[in-house]
Length: 181
Image 1 (cartoon, rainbow, N blue to C red):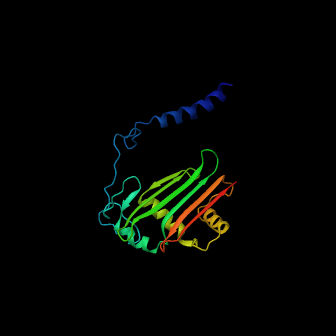
Image 2: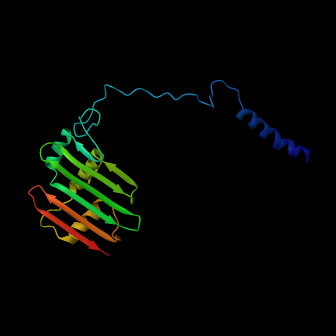
Image 3: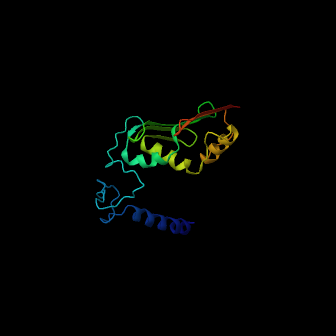
C-alpha cells in the first residue's frame, strides 16, 4: 500500500514544484503591458472612411463627412427608417437621413437588440450602405416584396410583431409600409 501512495505522490510533488518554479524567464505577474505604437506609414483603402483624418464631426449619430459624400451620391435614399419589433424587449431599429444634399451631412443610427449591436454615425451609415447594395426597393416595390427583401438582407426572422419601413428616394418619392402580426 505504501508503494502505491509513493508512486502517486512523487509525480504529483514533481508537478507541484515545476508549477512553483522561480525561473526568471517566466513572469507570472506582469507589471506593465507593452503596446506597440501605431504604424504611421500604413496605407488606407480609399473606400474606407477613416475617422481620424476625414474631418468628421459626429455628435449622437449626426455626421458631417465629405468622404462619405461619394457613397451618399450612389445611395438611392435620402431617408431610410426601419423599425421591426419582436419580443417585448427585442427590436431592430435603423435610421438614416441625409441632412443637406451635397454637403456630406447625415444622421445614422442602428439599435439592434436582435444581434446585440448599437452603431451611430459613420459606422451605422457604412453598415446600412453595405447591406443595401443588393436590395432593390424603389417606388414600385410591393409591401410584401419590401418586407421579404429587408428580412433576408438584414438576416432577421419573420416572426416580428411590428414592421415599419419609411423611406424617401432621391427623386423625392416617399413610401411607407407597415405590417403587424
